[in-house]
Image 1 (cartoon, rainbow, N blue to C red):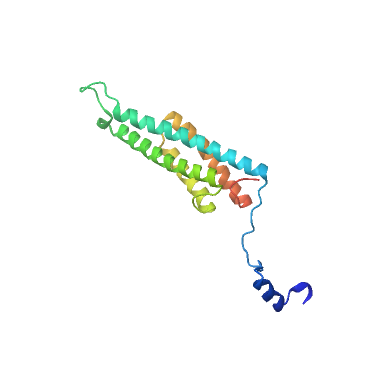
Image 2 (spheres, one colour):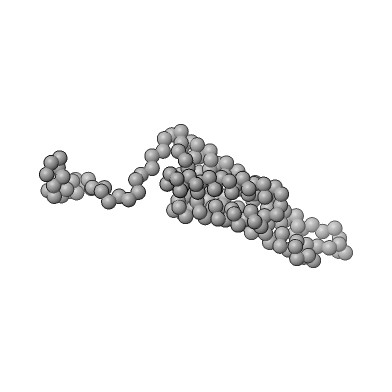
Length: 166
């Protein structure tokens, strides 16, 4: 065959360690230095929002659990709505703590904890669930920003096959 495409040439390439990549399904992603810097900044912004969400949710839960004005004053345990708020803030704080670890992992190693398709949907779905139960104003504000950013990542993944648009 022309241009070394015969069976003998393929055997020789395999012996030299050169393999045909005809069956590779996912092309490698090329990122320039500028796009890698933008991705790092984007991930850092997500980390800052997750840190703020964790801080406000955790502080809200701690203040509600420890706030007491005396033995005769009502406490958070006395009202079902306040129990829900304490539980919701605790759940959001634990989730945000986990996601902060995932953000640090992604910033430091340049890769997601889970496979990329699972990671973007995991972030988006949990941010959506958390925004529905987050009742603190500051936590709600930062979760709203996180939903926009994680939604942007999902759309970028669907359009380009990568979690960042460049």
